[in-house]
Image 1 (tube, one colour):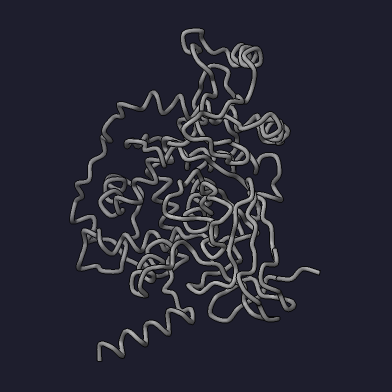
Image 2 (cartoon, rainbow, N blue to C red):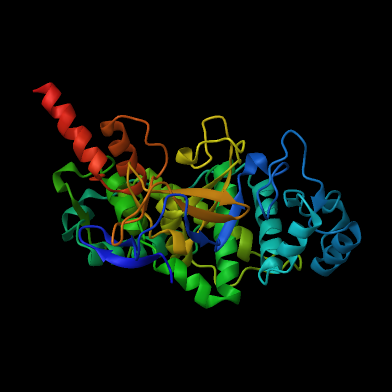
Length: 407
């Protein structure tokens, strides 16, 4: 019998609750990742499979031998001048067993070709071109159209789909690509690779909350050029000026995501010798992963000493973030600033352990990040990153204390 189950919780949606009494220290859940990625800055020292960290030494085991690389170079028809080093220098392992576990993975071929393509596109886009799109808009066009309430989910979804179609079809958007972008692209590519070989497992991701609308609204309020239309967006018709109008409206943060998609699309679908492309790439799929990852992935931290407090989840300020992963079965642990469950990384899996006794029917919660700050700081961080105002018992208690002191 499982000690926890997914239940509908009033005011919270779905979450885990205890089906029986759970003793402190009990392992209540172990979650395997749909996909993981190594932080770009730690690729030489981090095992791609189990996230063993060997800093300052590099990991020793390569993903394939020189002979295997030569065979794949010939298969992909990579010119010799472009093959002076390893094709996969950022894919290293701590042991042959980890390497073999990766190679036994049914999506490993897609991951290898995708990572190579992303690296090549990054090298060629180091001196990226400026976007040659005008943002000037004919005010008469904007005055002659109808507007809709940005809080209408259905209409906003249709509007965003249209905006993405307009700006990413037959248009290349460019921006500088940071290390975090490169890691994010590898993660999204790994998710799509998983979809192409195991649709059932991939669809577990789609159950997770999509935060695209919340992301858009949070940035629109501070960037709109039409203050007299606060909280509204125009219903734009096809024709001259539509693209410019969309660019003038979209927050810079949304345009940045579009430009990242353009990089991703160029990398994984453009002709590149005989290197396999990644099937199923489109902006709808990219967004469905990107905006679910934003508030639902788990950081994969360097493991601390065995004496690290269980209350900290094995993570302290002096440890490095080695990467992150998407764990669909783990997203049903809601947040509390006084959590009764702690998560511990064990290799590439996440283990969830009861911090204290949990009663039957009590919700099982973890903390999203550090909860050492004061209540206002915690709530501000959670609202910014996870799009909710925390109403856990600790926050309510500290908020009442704080306001009673002020009075």
